[in-house]
Image (cartoon, rainbow, N blue to C red; front, side, top):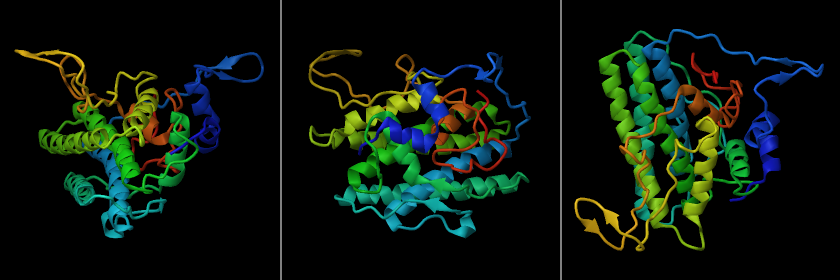
Length: 318
């Protein structure tokens, strides 16, 4: 996996790169020596259906990723499937990880169907899947992360795990952040169930990356580059919304109720260090990650969604 920043400029736009490099501005230069304040998106009243459609876009993305990895085909049109660039069947090296991939695909497809059904039951309009681009998005993100000039998450088993980890951690933070926006306790309960499942997914994938890490494949180091970039895109320029991955070591003592000696704990669980609560992201922060745009860039498309997400919530507001 390798990516250059020049490749990212081509794939994600110069505005994003300028901001990530610290060269951006909070105002736009008109070329006349004056600046114009950036345009902000007016606030709208969001319904539970709007929020569920936002989540549905992300579930479409995850389901397409896993379905293509295990079957070579994506979401059926009857489930709202759309146009997808990239994504081929992965040749798995171990039956266990292949079985996990099949389970993840089935799980994400079930989420798609469940959310679609819930929106319909609320009287809302279910959005179809937006155009999805795995090829250019992964190449651009990998370039920005300093991994290499290109990255194909369908190339092999380890690449698949890294690609899966990109989505799962984001899904957990998205559902956690959206919880406060929902008004129906019934919908909130269902969303909490999906969030818990996504957390299971994320912890499993993070565990496998740590367990399969070697000095030859550098899986953990590679993933942590993704973590850093993801924090910059979807954390208001901060990495505090992320937990770097570590497999732990036998070098230090850990104080619990009783001492556990000669062990440094792993950081498989992505949570804050004080209360061990899952991180939460706003819709804008999530959009910046999937669009591959820096905070402050109010562009309604890019990255994994070249034509933008479908529904009311599709443009970052910060």
